[in-house]
Image (cartoon, rainbow, N blue to C red; front, top):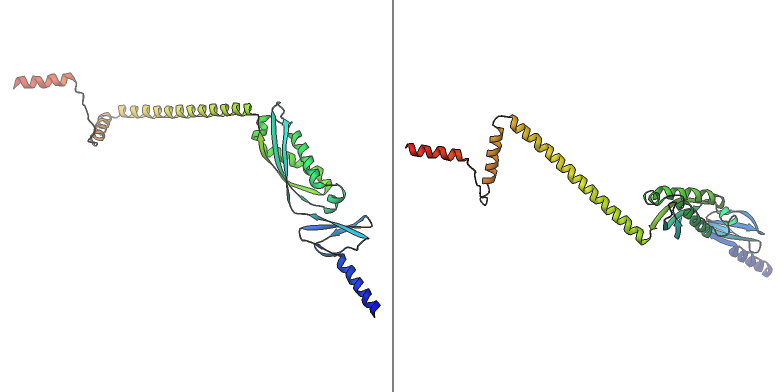
Length: 249
């Protein structure tokens, strides 16, 4: 009886030591005698000590910060570019078997790809087409890392740093462009106003009495404010006519 009890305790101890927990966001890679023998799904799984081993793989989406990279654009402008890559493990077995450290590998490959892509475009294309360049980087990295069991979901260019002297030049250019647009808008407004005034003058001249009515309306508008002083200019002929009436009387 004691032997059976001891044997039972040993078996239970081995079973307890063999239980491994795989969380929902993980997958386990099981090796038996050094050979890959399957993927462990979430839950409690048995891993026989000595004969078997396993390694957990996180399959959640990860964000990798690609550090600042010095690159030269196609028009020979030196820039510093950094980015963020979002990816997840699509095949846990490949991520462990095909590459030593998939997190480090994808970061290094993204850095090289980003420098190469920046070197294929001009500075204007880089500044105005970040989304296109980011998509191009994503496509290239995704194709290469597919063999590693990884799926690149998105790439975002965070910042593009320019040399200080070039930033000042671009700032002056942008200011000149704003002034140019302001002058054009002002001139277009003056042109529209002059065209409307010409049309109004034509209409007033063509309608009998319209000019006099407009004059009376303007006088009425000025007299509505008591602080205004209105001076009426009367032709000399009218004054002489009034003097003539006074002498006759």
